[in-house]
Length: 74
Image (cartoon, rainbow, N blue to C red; front, side, top):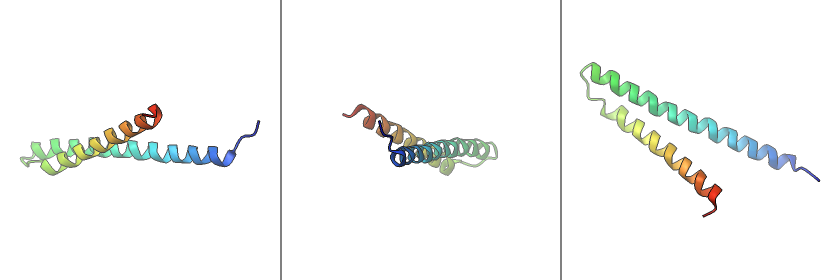
């Protein structure tokens, strides 16, 4: 049995990068919602941070859905 270490390293690197990116995107969404709350507390509208947060959450949901699509092999 032979292990293709280059392919294994490539898969590991890609999965690590995508995982860190997805977590960072979700964190940006949470930070946007927090900014919306602080803007509302100060009398502002907070529409722009909320829109950015929802966009981040939608991108996270799309990435997860695409991953499930790849795994399921539709």
